[in-house]
Image 1 (tube, rainbow, N blue to C red):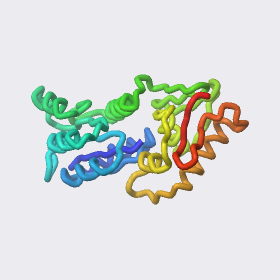
Image 2 (cartoon, rainbow, N blue to C red):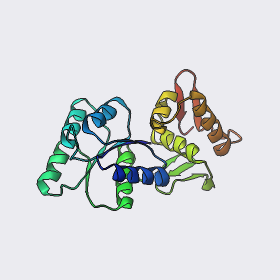
Image 3 (cartoon, helix red, strand yellow):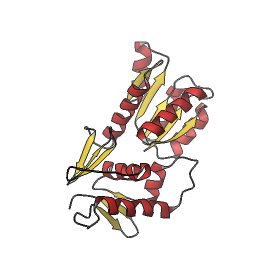
Length: 224
């Protein structure tokens, strides 16, 4: 999953990004200025936006309103020191999906963000099942036929995105856009390598054929 943090306190933004990367395996981009943050959010396919309200250049509420007017439906968690009822109502009415005031607990922030992402893909529970395959998005645990399958960080991130989109075709470009941040050199053969590794680990005898390649379209994870 790929996250954007728009927060003018650079140290706080970096701390949040570190937690997201280390505990959840998210790809994270950061902006510390309003107009730049709006441009990033409006031109890239993020799975979640963490948005401060008090920003230089363009305020958080204005960013949120402009994104919703542009048709952007990514979940937005508002993160700010403003904690009055009027501020919370204004943020939610502008299109925010959740609200967390500073100071906050990093574990709570991460849990809220994970829940918002799951729900945006239509999943209420943290454990997602497709046939014999089960992925616990909180514990980052993968099981096949109730036996744990150990994956590398990028293998897990690839599988997590595919199972979030289970039953839908996911192109190579989409995978690259949602699994890597701006600092990554993106090559399609990297995606193919992770898909091949997942097939070997999940289904070495091709009993279930969970991940299907559709020539010229992408990948499809579904229950046969």
